[in-house]
Length: 505
Image (cartoon, rainbow, N blue to C red; front, side):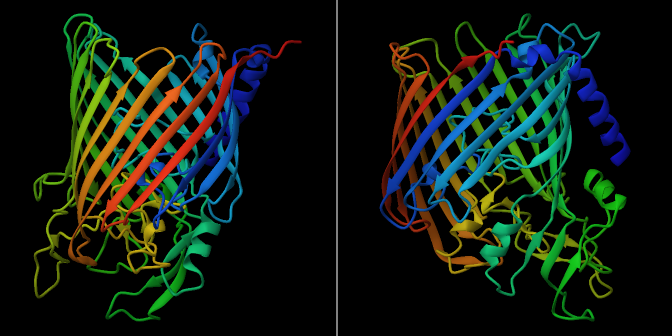
């Protein structure tokens, strides 16, 4: 693996050097100033979540952000294409880290195949990014991870199918950057956390249909991710096993760990026989989406079924948990452009009983999945934000739930209804509305005394004056109520300026 990476990193810059003169063309720049203020215990939910981790759950926060990007598709007429980006922020009220590298990446593409190196914000799979509640496995909630990613970023028509079949895929390895955050969050308590963890992700999607011939297309696929390697701190020992009750251990076992991340296998350090479990924190989703393309309008329906390890990967216990939604994009009108409705249900999780196969009871019951929680890595999170759907509560909120310094997802058994609306009345004015109603039972291991509910609202207006091209002003109102996060009202304002420039000799 190391030799392949070194070879790629050697060849690609040499190829790029031959075409360096065009790298200064069509560079996009943007500067943004954002401030959020609110009352209550926390910032309004949609002021915090699905912002790629560049936000805070605290009442008041703000940042100055500046970035440059050159889209790889600027070279769309060439076989070799090069893109890059740098996106930096200076923040207040967002923890102890004030200088943030949000994105720093380079893309090298040959025809349809792309090698992406670095830290980059990536869009949701098969969902409306502005209106959805987020993805279940790979969302837009947490800060992006640095990674080496080989991908078909856009659907590639399979030769010989007359455009009726197309494929999209990626394979990536990366690493977590929240060592300092995890240590600070743990605050010297004897609770589980990890440092130096590694990341793996892969996906394969197949699209069936030719929009030019027939208005219906169907897309389906599988994505899987894994947290592995690093050093585990305060790992709990299983009852009945020799050794200390809590211990630290290196979780990286050389090439085998990379292989077990790619093809789930192996076991974790405190598994032992007969309690073997796939190495690392393995998660994934099955996707299915159908779209009808009308003249000037479209409608789609989709589902995403999340699974931990293998107990919900196939049909062993039935698929009772999933995110499903509908999206309608209306013909041009001055009021409403797009509508999204989603239902998120994670109450089942293969049932409340888990039992490994033993001599006394030779049948294994793989229930009690504990979505987003892991007995070695704590939680499917990065710097306090869950890496999937934020309606399963992020660890940064745990002080409210009585689990301060515990790296875990408390509200994982949820039932939620989510609505997103947007419109573009004029070229200058646009608006967006998000509303979510959520009910939670906590989790199987840490249930709530009674069902808890919450309502989250955000109303947003954006103004882009014709007289000042590139200027954008967005004002938002946010509201929380209910038992989960309590009451909160707040406002957010963001001012941005963007454009293109060229570097000339």
